[in-house]
Image (cartoon, rainbow, N blue to C red; front, side, top):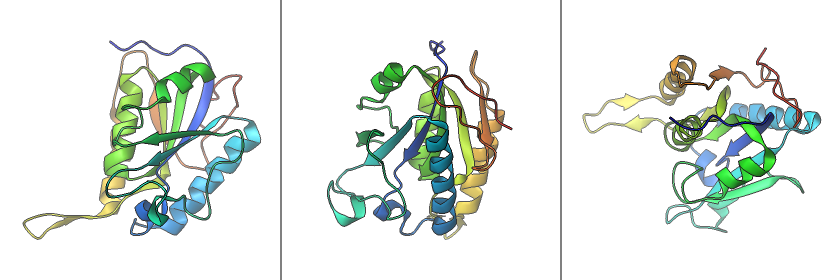
Length: 194
């Protein structure tokens, strides 16, 4: 069993909201707007924000596609993690940063739902963190299958939202909340989702 994280800090983690990731993502302008709303609410509450930025052969570091979307990006004093794998935890300093912050609860938003958001969500729960997935602030693209069928992006998003409400891990809490519902309380403790 994973160690359940002590501490009371709730953090907002914004994953891969980059030009090349969001350019073809489903409902991207609306999702970016809701992520912006969650970021503004976290900043207002004094909750730490962790920005995760992906880079690999398909998304080269410092390329135009690698940049944050124009509407979003870290401010001075906010934390930045660079990653090469789907999970924000793999071969990064994320666990150490969360420990320094005294974080026990991650509020997660970004892209892509079926890859980096899913891997990061499961990675957080498996490492003992409570998790709230911002249900209307993550997105992806449709997946064309070899048989000619397509799994549409809205279904992929809905499936992960359902999973995050039904999963159970010992000693941890996981749920979903919309960008409007999630409550931030800074570093002094965690408010329950409305």
